[in-house]
Length: 281
Picture 1 (cartoon, rainbow, N blue to C red):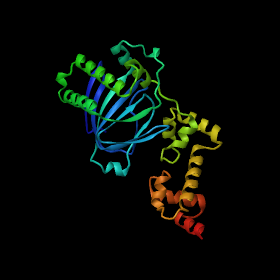
Picture 2 (cartoon, helix red, strand yellow):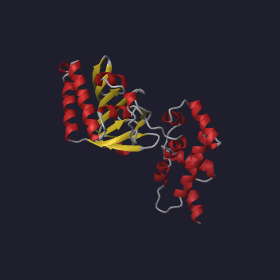
Picture 3 (cartoon, one colour):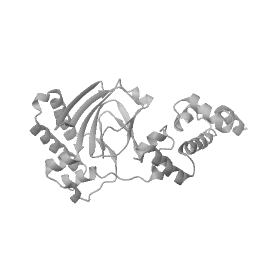
Picture 4 (cartoon, one colour):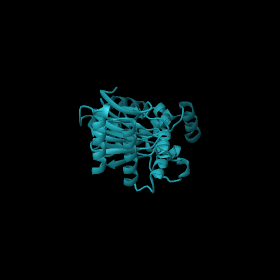
């Protein structure tokens, strides 16, 4: 998928990475459970969907993310912003951080109230990014000692910018994801176009476990419930003058107007335009 990828590693594990990639509709996060990360957005725009947030990020911003499940997404407007995306990532491995700083992260109870956070890239972070760019473009300069030094510098910068009590506390918080209630995860993403399989991943469950828990709480299958709620919202939006049917389809999580029209007619026995006319009458 990558058009270009440059990496710096320690013991075979990527710690700095610059990638250029074509646009996509949705991809799951590419990191493991024991990894947190920071991303500089060098080019383009994209969004991040989590159980409790939906963030849109543009060139010049940064994304700080804990180790948990989420999705990268783009829409047509974002895809029009440039030919492709370019990101520079700093990947924090828990075991590596403990070894590098001689920390036992389990000794800290410090927590922060986010799983992902958009950051403004200030002058210090911008200078840091440029130093990593130089190393990625000249990997012969980047021995293990220098890479470790840059990792330490990054943790120091972020812990101060986030007002963490210490580097230990900052790192400990990054590897303690906040748990989102199941109902909250569903409600916050109800009008997305997530599939049942993607909902399960967002909730860190297998598909069978997700379906079972969903049925226990909502007393019907995910597919039936999602369709019912989307049709309810669509029918309400159709009563508001000025709402274009194509916009309503998008707001209710449909990829195309044709799909929305077909499902709406199957549900109500009328097309959206016919429903609007009969209700207005």
